[in-house]
Amino acid sequence: MSHAPAWLSYAFLYLAAAVLTVPVARALGLGAIIGYLAAGIAIGPWGFGWVSNVQDILHFAEFGVVLMLFLVGLELQPTRLWSLRRPIFGLGSAQVLGCALLLCAAALLAGFSWRVALVGSLGLALSSTAIALQSLGERNQLRTSSGESAFSILLFQDIAAIPMLALVALLGTASVQGHHTPTSVALEVFKIVGVIAAIVLGGRLLLRPLLRWIARSRTPEIFTAAALLLVVGIAYLMVLVGLSMALGAFLAGVLLAESEFRRELETDIEPFKGLLLGLFFIAVGMSIDFGAMLRAPLMVALLLIGFVAIKSVVIYALARAVTIPYQERPVFTLLLAQGGEFAFVVFQAAAGAGALPGEMASLLIGAVALSMLCTPLLLLLLDRLVLPRYATTLRTPPEGEISEPQTAPVLIAGFGRYGQIVARVLLAQGIPATVLDHSVDILEVARTFGYRVFYGDATRLDLLRMAGAAQARVLVLAVDAPGPSLKIAALAREHFPHLKIVARARDLTHWNDLRDLGVTQVQRELFESSLLSARSVLEHMGLQESETDALLARFRQHNIALADRMYPHHKDQARMIAVAREGRSQLAEQLAKEREERTLRSAAGMGYPGYGENEQAPGREDAYELKNIR
Image (cartoon, rainbow, N blue to C red; front, side, top):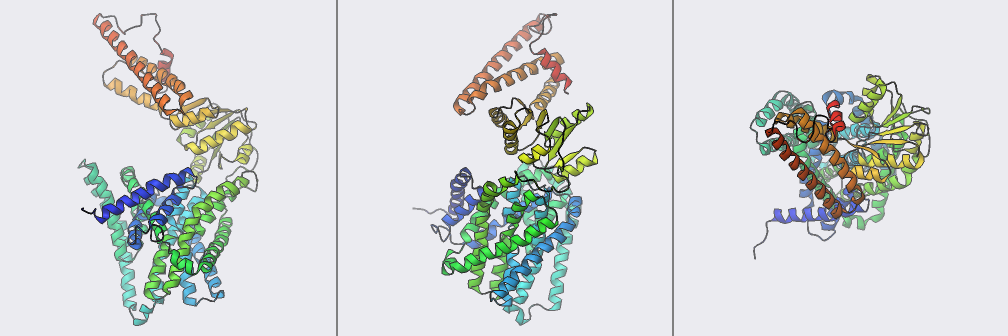
């Protein structure tokens, strides 16, 4: 009997473990990260033992973090990065140095040698970029003040990992043998500066013309290959000079953030990023050395609780110092208090250089891995037990939040593209509106154009009260994400039943969920614009204007009526599909009949089919509406 190649066996194993555990974890409300970590523990050396080469897998899976930071860089234009230079080097250095100093002092007081205390404190001061950015992205907090501060600190940590590794090598026994002369150090610095300069200049002068040339080939798979080659090539250069792969990928992303290929690169790389990031979390689960921890369980517990507690104190103090909104501080603190993937690299390098005993390195790596495993669980407890108290406790709001009750008759939740149009129409009519949004960037833009937008999360009951929901007449739900949108609608229906809610729905599922909450005035965000695009296509295909308007009016009427017919069955998928098919079949038959009548009347020279000179075409009011919203 023939055997499957190793790569195929491992691929099947990883994908099967992820497919089985992640949906279960999500269904239990634990989040995808916990599912991946549980999968890694199950198939790793201390689970079923199906995978033994954990370090090789971990090194490969780290590329998921590299791809993630490349995509983050694509979202961050150079001017925006320059504006973050102070929090990156100011707040970032304060976090790393503050945590390292306190951790080192605690280790010395506990009786560890200065070498172990220094190396251990530097590694434990780092946080998990993968878990922090993933969690902030799921919570839509990357653009908040806490999200930007966390990102600045994580980016500084990636930069700080470089001198940490150099220091670990100097502290090791290998340094005694004179491998690090002034000349060799100067040469290493020159190589580092040269590679970074090459990435910056190459990104400016070569990457865009190269991508333009590849795009002209009109071969999508080659453009995808080029996108991956770009990230792999930069990561390879960074590894050659001992720099962080993630830092190089981030720089490349920033340099391409203003290019015309930004969206195409995001689309091509996103699937690879998601799979490799999941593999990284699986590898973290497999890397937990339960044997070392079982030999010294008390030591591991003390390490875990001690370093997380010390980091939490420092990080929460920094959050207060930089005036991060109080309701965002718990998540900000917890995400940065955990250990990070770069700690694995630091501790393994220290053990290899002799700066850290092998057993101690295993204990530290185990404590870091356990902190990463516990963070999603602690976030879940935070969401259910701690954060709800913040919604009912009023404190002094930070700059930009509502500090006094508002009285405008209209309350708009969300000031993106959708909310801005609604606000502009109201402003043109002289109708005042109170606008809430939790994006700092949007606040800055809105103030530039003279809008009064308050910073805040509209899912908080206390903030809705302060915004004047009790006195307002209309609530406009312009929030993009369905989850927060439904939460706001539920709060409004329960606590402010007098409010008329006008909502934006991302899709039909979101529309149905809003209807379940009693919201009847719901607009699907792309429905009307899609009809107008279809109108333009039909005109280009030769249909007359009156013919096109009547056809689209008929379709619009039918689609709205069909959605109303499907709504009572939206929880019964089979019945809903049957109603949808029946409705589409009826529409197709009706339109076919009208086309046949049109052909006969045109042949007879009688004009537009089915309507006499004084007859009103079905949906003519809708046709008028379609013409006037262009």
